[in-house]
Each structure stands twice: as C-alpha cells, then as structure tokens.
Image 1 (cartoon, rainbow, N blue to C red):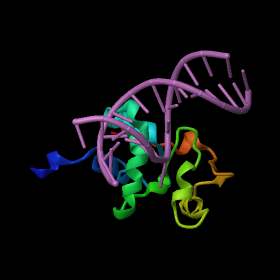
Image 2 (cartoon, protein in one colour):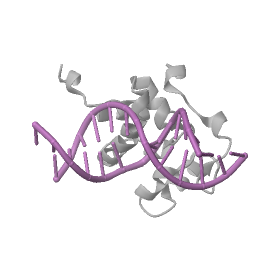
Image 3 (tube, rainbow, N blue to C red):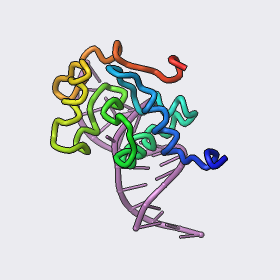
Amino acid sequence: MKEQTLSFFESVYEVVRLVPYGRVTTYGAIANYLGAVRSARMVGYAMNNSHDKQVPAHRVVNRKGLLTGKHHFEGTNLMQQLLENEGIRVENNQIQNFENLFWDPSKAL
DNA sequence: TACTTGACGCCTG
DNA sequence: ACAGGCGCCAAGT
C-alpha cells in the first residue's frame, strides 16, 4: 500500500538490484525502463542515496561504459575492483566488452 | 515557494 | 571523429 509512495529513487534501487552478477547496466537503460528516458541524470542522482541501501551501484555506469561514479566510492578504484571481482574487465575506467556485459532491464524483463 | 544541484545523454560546431 | 554546450527531471535546502 505504501509502496505506491515509492519515490523515483526507490524505483531505481529496485531495478539496480535486479542487475545480475557479472553484468552491468546504464543510467539511461534504467531510466528508459522506468519510462523516464530524459531523466537519466536522476538515476545517477538516486545512486547517491544508494549508499544507505543494498544496491550494487558499481554495476551501473554511463552509456559509454565509463565508471563515471567511481569517484563517489570509497577510495579511488573501489568501483573498478568490485567489477573486476565479478569477472568484468575494466581498463582506464572503461568497461571492456561493455556491450556484451550490458544488461538491459527492458530486454531482460 | 523558488533556486541549485547532479554518479547523463544528445545535438551542434 | 572529437570536444564542448545545452537540456531535463526530481529532490534537497
């Protein structure tokens, strides 16, 4: 019942949580899934609050496959470490084989 | 109530 | 092909 009061942010967390292990998605893909194609920025902004939630924010990158938000993680390369820990190859803040690892919620669902 | 910010994306030069 | 600027939407102050 109160679920209807879910803010845009919480909706984003739900989608990010659906990202399978070893896969990555983009802000635009999430926004598109939520019907807010023009609100890709909001998705990234929502991730700021994701620190208080259990959300694999490190699996979310921009549409170029760049770890733009890595600066928001602890340390400097924690985000990259987490991705590599899942078997994702990252080099120079850019995910290698990105289109292959790309997970689109609209397609998966 | 209004202004500013922001982990992006697309268009134009 | 590369770089820079503008646009959009929601939340916080």
